[in-house]
Image 1 (cartoon, rainbow, N blue to C red):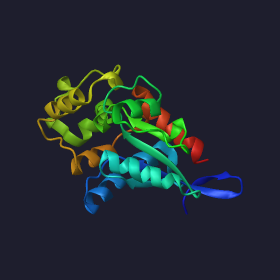
Image 2 (tube, helix red, strand yellow):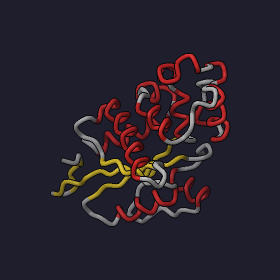
Image 3 (cartoon, helix red, strand yellow):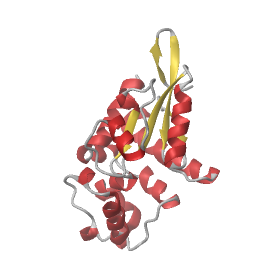
Amino acid sequence: MDAGRIRGHALVSVYLYVEGGGDSSEEHSRCREGFRKLLEKAGFSGRMPRIVAGGGRRATFDRFKTALLDSGKTAILLVDSEVPVTRTPWEHLQVHDGWERPAAAVDDQAQFMVTCMETWMMADRAALREFFGSALNEGALLPLNDLERRQRDEVQEALERATGQQYRKGKRSFQVLAGLSPATLQQHLPYFRRLVETLNAYLK
């Protein structure tokens, strides 16, 4: 049974539309599994949102907008911010992507991986050591302070260097995601903390 919160007298199911998974059903499954395992460790086991792998960035937004039309759903959008965030969520998406805030959406329904999913990985050194073992060069990783102010390319290139080019987006990225510690991410990444707080509010 989907988790949800009561609005009026109806149980509203919570759907999390995440950017990622490419165009194949196999990659969509890996994406959903990676996020599911991470959110279970964040305390959502037994009250999980329905995770939808949206594929490309625009496709994810379009699916989110369609879900907003369903009164039985609460839809939450989770995409890379792609650049550091200096505005409110919908202002950021309007300036960066040209996306207008849907009339039915509020601020907490726009959530970010700042500036990308690799920033989450960069924040958890223990998980990287566990996954990459002796191949990991920790000295090539970016400092933990102000990670969300780093540019997307800077984060991704540093992660590739630190893993001897073993890290690539796709299958391995979702495997790494599944092994991350939510507590560590909340310690270093305010926008990940915001995501957890928002989901907790909707999934009571």
